[in-house]
Each structure stands twice: as structure tokens, then as C-alpha cells.
Length: 524
Image: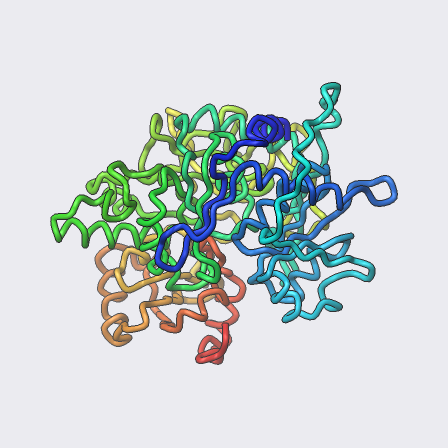
């Protein structure tokens, strides 16, 4: 990745802060300079080498820690293949991604998770575990810049394998090219405000490609600082209450940018309402800064009414859309081009169009190199280079993109009515006690809904509120007739992804088979 290499070379010996780790009280507990991080990464890169003439394939089991950043940059320097694995994965899921790895880098949290899984269950024979810590002495050898004669071909390799869901519990890997990431970063730099990533707060797992792009690479390209949550704090999307719990650290971090999930956007809106009710300036109360940061959001839709509420507080949220098969971002609303209810215009290097049935097609220079294995959920690339995303979309006259649903998720009820569940879920998510919602109804007479609610919620009152809301805002066919309620936040990750998307097969199985409440009180 040429742009990253140039920045690392430029700031290799700089004493400016690259990573700041917050303490429990919100003060900086640890600061790592560009010099320290690049020297540690360069030292680690020398340990990877090649395997029988091919790049090393290296698993990364790390939390949102400085060790992840060091490992990621080291793997780029070594031209190795990085396989980041979410710590929330099951042993079976982790084993599917790590099947062909030569090495596995772990920080303290990753090492503990590996022991929980059982090393022999998730790592192939001969895979070496490499513990990594930033607590030792800083290496004395500085970063050596790439040779001046490096050719374009030398700058392109399969740099990452990113997990994506499949039709089984075992995720498949999306193979990402280094030059594809370069193209993506170049486009993002063109549309995002200069210096926007000068101080970025990371609140979602680094195992997500979008977080690697924004939290690490965009920060580096702005010569900025990456701020990390206190060690051990639950990241947004990994536990139901994490969004609200991280709000004090959002204020302490004083960010200029962050990528928020819909649940965090909802928590920010509630906090903004409280600050306004107390006649407090909203931006300083929420972010510790006079002006609001660049707040970006993706993964699942946010209702336009909620975005208007935040706008009224002077907190614009910029929704975007992406998929790993395009190296993350496809389109994004920006401060210069923003339209509520859409996911923005395509990035400059991306072209989009819709097929006759409304499916979104994408063509760009940042498309992936294929999957580690194919299954029925794999996206297809046609002969003309268009990626068939499986998402249903509209493109307006000004080029703004609106995602209306998922082609394979369209519910056809027993009465033959077609329903886009994403739209219905976005409506019910407006209820103040609802943390997350998923609806199912394929082949059923009526819609069933799973509502994950606040722990103190009165379920009887919630059922009345759901019924009354449906009658007021939805047509007969779109209303949830059979609601199911869960109040245990530990069950969030059984039915929803980190970014808030429902795990539809798990939800349908639980609701239709009546097994939803079998897990009550279980460790989720």
C-alpha cells in the first residue's frame, strides 16, 4: 500500500502521538509515538518472511489494542497476508478462517481467547503462536524505506482475508488486494475534509475492514492520532449496553471523527436530548469539543427522523454503504454532499447502476480478488466486471444511493405479499425501549418480530406500544403481529452482528421453533 508506506516513511522518527489509550477515568493511560509504532512494526515484520516462496499467511487475534496496529502495519511492510479474527467468534468460526495460517499473532486478550477455544481446535498443525506486547523496550533499528525501484507489481499482493458470513456457521474469507485498498483510500481522501481524521476514536472491533480503513489508515494519512477505549471495555456491537457505556469516553477522547453503528447513533441522540434539556451546549457535552466531529455511520439503516433529531442538535451524521467485496466503502454522505435517507454518492473510483429487478451492481478498481471458498451466499462478478451485491437500491437524479432491502431477504408471506424486512425493522427501531429488532415471516401468515429491549422494560407495556406503533405507522401486512421480547443484553450477539444486522437464520429458527427463550440466563 503505497500511500501508507509513504506516510510511515515520512513520520517514521516523529515523536507525534500515533496511539493514545484511555484509562478508566478517561485520561490518557498510554501514548505511543509514530517512532515507537513504526519501529515495533518494522522489527516484527522481519519475523514473518516468506513460506516456500509465497507470502506468509498470518492470523491476528488481538483486541482494539496498540498490538493490533503494530501487527497490521508489520504485515503490510512484510507483504504478508493478514487474517484478522474477531475475538467474539466461536472456536468453529475461528478455525474456518485460520485453517491455512503459518503464524498467529496474539495480544493478551487474543492469547486468552485462544486458550478458551483450545489451540488444537482452531490452529492448523505447525502454526506458530507469536505473542506480541508493546510493553518492552522500543527497538533500536528504524524503519527502512522501500527500495526506490519498487515496481507497481511489487506493490500489489493479497494483503488481507476478511471474514464475511456464509450459509453455514463457518464464515468465508474475502481476499483483499493491496492496490484495491490504495484506490479506496485515494477516493476517501478526495471526498473527506482535510484533517478530519486528526483525532479518531475507535469504538468498534478492528477485525472489521471498515475500522482498519478509518481508524488506522485514514488516521495515518492525516498524520493523526488513534484513540483507543480502556482495555477490557466492551466495544460497540459486542454487547447490548456497550453504546451507552462508551459515551463518557467519547467525551474524554475529544475526537474529530468516529464511525458509529446505528446503536451508538441512537445513544448519541438520547444523550443530545438530555444535554439540550439541561440547556448545555450539545457538542461539548457529548464530545468534549466546541464543534461536532465527523460522525460516520453504516452497517444498518438509521431512520431519517433520528438523523433530523441529531441535525437539530448540530450533530450531522453521515451515512454510508459498503461491503468487504469492494474493500469496504462504496458510497458515503460527506459534509459537502449529504442527503438524509440515502447512503450518499459513490466514491470517485466507483460506478453503480441497478439491474432490472432493482439489484445494486458495483464496478470499481477496489473490488476483491475472490473468496477463500464459495457458497450460495457468494456475490457474483459478471463478464463485464459488475459485482452483483444482492442489495436492492434506488439511485436518484443527483446520484445519491438509497438501499431499500436485501434481495434474498425479501419476505414472501403465506398470503403472497412481499415485504422488505429492513424497512420494517427501521420503523420499529424508533421505539425508545428497543435496542435491536428483527422480523421474519417467510411462508407465515403474519410477521413475527424479535425485540431486544432495555432491561428495565415492562414487557406488557412494550407489547401494547409495539401494537399501537404498528397501527399508526405501518400497513396491515407490514405490522408485527407476533412480537417476542428479550431483555437480557448478553443475548445480543446470538441474534445480531457487531454492526446491528440481524442474523436472520438464527432469528427465524428461534422464533419459528419456539427456542428463543432457551438461552435465558445463559452466557451469551
